[in-house]
Structure formats: structure tokens, C-alpha cells
Image (cartoon, rainbow, N blue to C red):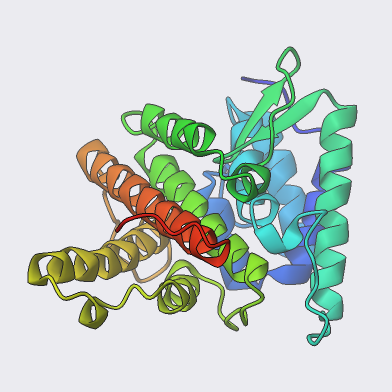
Length: 286
């Protein structure tokens, strides 16, 4: 893929990141995405624009860079067009503006024959539209969700950081949609660990509530897995951050993380289904 980033996308993405990132987080995001060169001087908006323009000129795959930059925004369930705002919580103006910018990005992508796919992949033409990850989760389409993990696994060897990020994003989306669908209070910090804490409490995934000691150990292990995946994504994505020793993520590490995330996702979705069945009076056996 060597198609350049359209100038209209550069403008909108620059607006988005300059409004919602600090200088430090913008630098970290662009370095994680492997944007070309050093951070340009100037305001956040100027920095983002110049960095993307320079990437367009010298990077062999500028669209791959853009996909990683917008991934966290596009795949955040709160940014979805059909996101239902809680009746008792007023949305902050910045969240509304961010969602509007995400919609603009989707429109400009379509105008330029580009499609966004889970994990930060931008494809050009010839591919049928696919359901969003949020739609797959809400529809409990487990075979399709399994395929999303398969896609993450396909990038393990060549792009281990992207594989971990994609798997982590799938988990995070499942947890956030569970919180929304069950009218739970979204934590102020919406990283992987805080949203999982809300979900596990509501699903009754407390090791102390399980009589079998062997199962207690396994469920306790789920907590460590989620913490580890969240930390791995953060640390691997901050490999170029100032003052931090380079974090070398190997394919075997990424493969372990993706498989572990897949296991957690399957267990949470099955437990969610069991809870819904119980509500409907169709309780299955444990």
C-alpha cells in the first residue's frame, strides 16, 4: 500500500489530534504509528499537519501510519454513530466534537475510496463493507469476533505491536459495550483495566464467589491477563518515549497476548449470554 494520505484527511486528523492530545501524547501516538522523522516544531495542529505531510513524502506506506493514528478514535465505542448517551450524564462538549470529527473522517475516507478495518488497517477499493466491531459485539456474532482475533494473529510475525493493539482494542470494545448495554457507570479513565473492573463486578466474576478452588485460580488469572495485555499495549506503544528504554516486543510475546485476549473475550461473551438468558428465564446449566 503506497497510496498517499489525502490532504483533506490530513486536515481533519490534525484537527482531531490537536484538540484531544497533549504535545507529549501526540508525539507518542505518532511515534507509535511510525510517522517519519522527528516531531516538527510549532503548535499541536501545525505539528500534526507537518508530520503527516512529511510522512506522505518519505514513508513507503503512509496510509498504514494514518490507520494507527486514528485507530484509538475510530474503535472507541463512545465515538460510534449509534452510541446512546446516558440520560443522567451530560456529555462534555469535547466528546461531542470528537465524535463529529470521527464522522468526518469516515466520510472523507469513503470519498477517497478508503475503508477502515479493525486494528487500524486502511484498504483501498474492491472490498465489501463489513460490520463494525461494535455491531458484531452487540449482535453476539462470535464467529465474526473470532475472525477479528484471527486477523490480529495474522500480523503477529511482521507487526507484533499492531497485533497486541488490535487484540486489546477488541477486548476494550467488548467491555465498553457491556457497560453501555447494561446502563452501568463508565469509569472516568476508560482504559482496559478500569472498564474490565466494572464488567467483572457486574458479571459476578469474583474468585471468592466460586466454590471450586481450581476455578478460583483460573478466574484470578483472568485479571492478571487483562492487566498484562493493557500494560503490554501501553509499553510497546511507548517504545520511543523519552526516558524509556526501548521495549522489544517479539512475535512470540504478541502471539501469547492475542491468544490470551481471545480466551478472555470468549469467556466474557459466554458469561454475558448466560446472564441474559437468566434474565429471560432460560437459565442453562453452569
